[in-house]
Amino acid sequence: MKSTRIIILTFLSITLFASCKSEQEKTEPEQEELVNDNVELAKIYENDQSDRMTDNINWPEVTRRDSLREVRVYEMLDSNLVVTSKDHYHAAMVFQHGGDSTAYKMAMNLMERSVELDSTANKWLLAAATDRYLQSVNKPQIYGTQYFKMGDEPWTMEPMDTTVITDEVRKQFNVETLAEQRQQLAEMNSENGEHLHDH
Image (tube, rainbow, N blue to C red):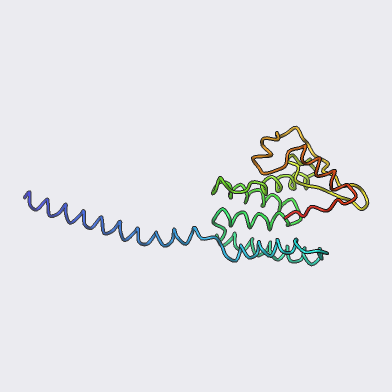
């Protein structure tokens, strides 16, 4: 009787081990696949950036391409193809250039997820998306990432609320301190001041 129990227990142990091993073999390739960054999304991000790196930018054409990129990223999100921290960063940049509060809010949410997945991710885009969203709903920016110029008027960062966060927080988000921002603004408004591209 004792021998029979040992045989049964041994059989059950072998069966359980084989089952666990089989299940592990099924999931390991899936896990490896999930950690790969989305190649198409990385290319979309590169195109977004290259459109803004050239001289004499044709903004109507860039805006048209931005809209197409946004549509494609929405499709990727619906198909669960935006997975890694970098995927979320790349997608957030596309929505950062979306042109309305809905897109900016998407950029914020995607960047929050990017940081959740990788605490070392560059948080600057989260700050920029937050500022842009706030201003799109008629509220002042708080980090100081957005510079504006209307016609012959000087560059400005207004409206901006400098009391919400500290310079220490700005540094954590890879944003310049208030003093550095004011210096940057002064240089932009000098005779040789140039536009800062929002990448």
